[in-house]
Length: 249
Image 1: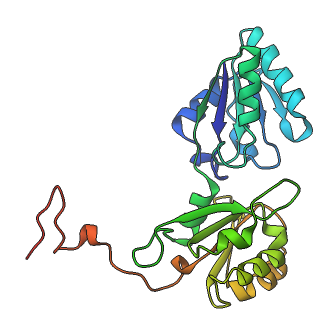
Image 2: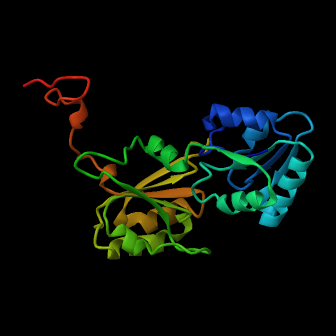
Image 3: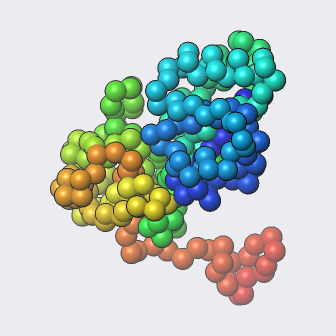
């Protein structure tokens, strides 16, 4: 069996209980070496085969997976965050299906959750934004045009864009939805021991990233959810009636 496992955002203790258990019992571990905390590999069972996928092609990964499965071994394919976000897992799953190799997925805590925790932020604040968009700047792979996406003005999280803060700033400013004073933040390696938080605005985003030396391993967060103004949730308002509580008149 091939187990796709979300390693979490970085901190070794933020992998799920299920993910940690599968990892401990795996015969073969293939991990995203440039993104996964190596501390997660400290409790593998003796003689576990460990491969760093940073040095492998898709075909290499599939070959190791299939060979291990045919030999009756369990494989842990360890991805950073949650595999469903920028994990390139669909192509692996489809290829395994074509080869008749079974697999399952254990979700993980995404770095966008870790970044919000680091900032003490809530993406969906009443009266501010009830939606959050996860996206990225176009880079080596195709991506939606940021300017069009940003036009919605909702809470925004950009992956894989830390080294393109100047282009991000330009696109955000030209979207018409954000002004220079719109709050923003850069979270470098959320939940890792060397986590860094840089608070800024849309208008100072590029300079902030440059001053901090941010090139990769960072999320860019944008929106008024990072500001000070929002409405109180009606769910816990004394006057609001719910299925479990009658509101005061």
